[in-house]
Image (cartoon, rainbow, N blue to C red; front, top):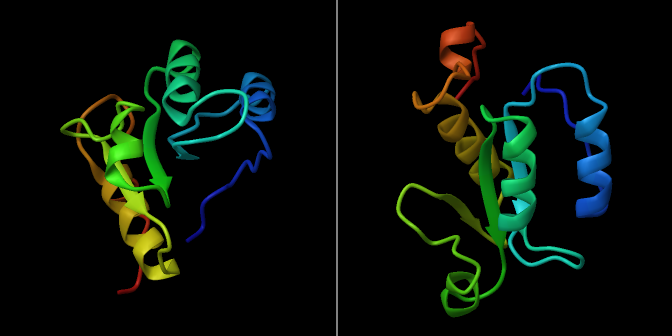
Length: 115
C-alpha cells in the first residue's frame, strides 16, 4: 500500500520505536489482548506523545472478552481475526481516511489504491 510500517514484538518495543521515530505516525494497529499491557493501554500511552494517532484494534477473542478492554465503544475501529489482507487493507484505508483529528487521510494526500 506504500505505507511505512514500524513492527514491534511487544508494547514496550512499540513505545521505544515510536519514541525515537522522527516522522508522523498516522496509525497504530494493535491487538486488544497482549502481554505487558492491553492494546487500549498502549494506545493511551502513545496518544500522550502523538495526539494525531489513529488506532485500529484487532482480536480473535469474543466480544465479551474485548468489551472488558473498552474497545467496543462507539467510534472505535476494530477488525476481528481471522481476517484477509483485503479486509486489513479496507480497514486501514477507512481509518486513515477518517476526517477527525489533524492527520490527513490517504485520499487527501493523493495516494491511490486500486480496488
